[in-house]
Each structure stands twice: as structure tokens, then as C-alpha cells.
Length: 426
Image (cartoon, rainbow, N blue to C red; front, side):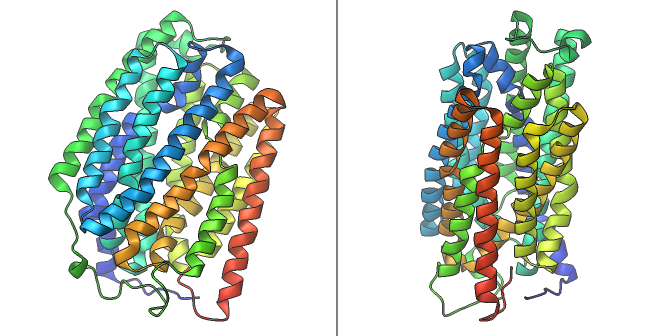
């Protein structure tokens, strides 16, 4: 196992330039997005019958993420072919910024699904080029830390968004309705307040687009450090190990349904009002922030296998425990543990992609990585929602835990099989 010797200039590259600016872009984007996203179950309840909310959530995230995933594959290839990342990053964030606030005028469930679909088109265009740009803007020995720092900025925006949403709804609804018990459907006042909130989300989105336009710089291939090379220079650009890694990621994705189901479970089991949904979402992202930087540092020091496997095992444990939570404090504890899963895996997985492939193919590799993650979203979220409606939440959660366990076995086998052949920058 390779252990990196992290230098001062390497650390400096994490907290300045493109990595910092792309972190700000993600901060503003998630500020905008997360003012809306955790409240969509409540918004759906005012548009469709209560028995169909879980199905609509599954359809929304499943269809949107699947289409986004196909676009991630092609946007990565295009950015490699043209040798530029910034134009696709700008286009992707721009589409999402101006589509998202249109949720304010939705009058039917399918309208929400359509706009979420357009929002995710933007995500599909920007994600692979953005991650390739991050990998090319830092030294290889701090790649895990850089991706985790970026995710921390993302999650910081995801904390601020719900907080601002809570203050906004408090001013429009008052404390009693914000923290009151949940009814079968959102009432007129709640729907009116949500529409104004969704429109307000345009402001931080515009700030993200401005940062891209004025602060992000292209990195030429010649400027990428000579040490930024895959471990085996004689291997194919996309090696067999990379594809086995994708198999493990695909297995995990098939059980990784929308996080909204966690909120919806808490909402329905404990009859919680919109204030609780906002608070749950905020705590989840605070947990992600707390664990993201340690997770990235551990992946650089101890190896990607350690952090990814640990994260997937925690995911499995949370999914096994969630349907048995009979007290509200249990939900709080599980939400915090769920943040640990994100902290251990998000930066580590993205860093591992760059560890396996050379710069010339990195956009393509990130496209494939994000593609398989998202292509698993349609069956994962859709099956989860349908099983929830026709069987029980417990059945849905257990299926997700099974796929996480299978993924952990595959990635462990990958690293065990290659450990004796050559060192792995895990």
C-alpha cells in the first residue's frame, strides 16, 4: 500500500485556485438546491394522493438521475476530446440554476418530475468535467483530501440552504405550523410558502454561475504535474481494475435509493411537520461536513479501500436499523451515522478514479463512474418506492442493505487480488 508524503505546496493546492472556487460553486448551488429538495415530499403531498407520494419520489429521482448519468458519460468524453472542462461546467450549472426555481409554479406531480429532470440534465453535463478539473488542479498525494474538501463546501451549502428555508417558512407560516404535526397533505398556506421559497432559490444559483464565469481557470494538459500518472504506466488507459471498481460501485448504486426516503420515513412514522424535515436534513449535512475531511485524509494516508469499505458497511448498518427505529432519538442517531458513510466514500471514490487512469482519459473515466452511479438510481429509487407501497418500508431498506454488502465484498476482493502484484494507491 502506497503511503503519500504530503508536502506544503501539495496541501496549499487544496485550499486555493480551482479547488476553492469550485467548492464555492458547489456551496452556492447546494444552498439553492437544498432549500427545496428536503421539502419535496411535503410539496408532493399537496399535489398527489398520500398513497402515491413514495412512488412519485422514486420516479422523480430515479428517472432524473438515470438521464443525468448518461449525460455524464458523454460530457466526460467530450471534455477529453476538446481538451476543455470549463464550458461544460458553466453550461451544466447554468441549466440547473434557471430550471430549479420554476418549481414555484408547479401544479401537478409530473411538473415536479419534469423540472427535476431538467435540473439533473445540468448535473449530468457538469459533473464529469468538474471532477476531472479538480483532479488536474491538485497534486496526486492530496487528491482524496481535495475531493473531500470540495464535498465539504458542497455540504456547507446544503446546511445553509435548509436553515434559510426554515427561517423563510417561519416568517411566512409561524412557529406552530412549522413545527406542528404533519397532516395527510400540505395545506394551502404551506403550499403558498413553499412556492415563494422555491422562487427565492434563484439567487444563490446565480451566484454560483458568476463564480464559474469569473474565477474558474482551465488547466492545460501540459500544466498537469508530471507525477500525476496512473500507477501502472504499461496498463491500458482504462484498466481491468478500474472496471472491477465500477462493478462494485454499480452494485452499491442499485441499493442506494433517494435520501428523501429517510426523511419520508421519519415524517410518516412520527407525524412530523416541515420544521423537522429541515432540521433532519441540516443535521445530515453537518454530519457529512464533520466526516468529509477526515475521510479524505484517511484515504490518502491509509488507502481508499479502508475508507470506501468502512463507509459501505456503515450504510448497510443504517439501512438495516432504520425500519426498526421506534423512537425519534434513534432517527437522529442514524442520520448522523449516515453522514459518516458519505464522509468516508465521496472523496475516496472520486480520488480512486483518478488513481486508476491517466489525465488524457480522466473525463471519460469520471463520466463512466458517475454514469454507473446514476444508472443504478432508477431501479434503486423506483423499486424502493414501489416496495414501500406494496410491501413495507422494511422490505425496501433491507434490499438496499443487501446491495451495500455485496458491493463491499467485491471491492475488498479487488484490493486483495491485486495487493500482492503491485502497490495500490488506494
